[in-house]
Image (tube, rainbow, N blue to C red):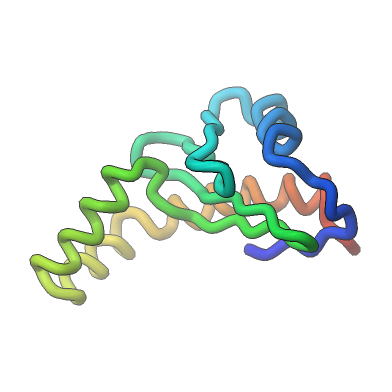
Length: 112
């Protein structure tokens, strides 16, 4: 989900603080200097990336281990089987979480 903003001075600590206040039961932490990771559980999360005039929210596995496990399963089992499992078990939960976080960020920082 892309959120267009008019304020180029948005910082990661500011976004993290607002998200932690709005969603106290979720965890938000930085991965590196350019990515904020929000997690609902060990398998449901979202990447939040701030660019000059937009915020990008993408549903993804919140841990690096989960992402690597999915990538290795794609290589070892082929493309079809892991994708079927991904869409059957994870995709809908990841999209719900992405939408929930994205809607809040749209209200806070988005342009109309």
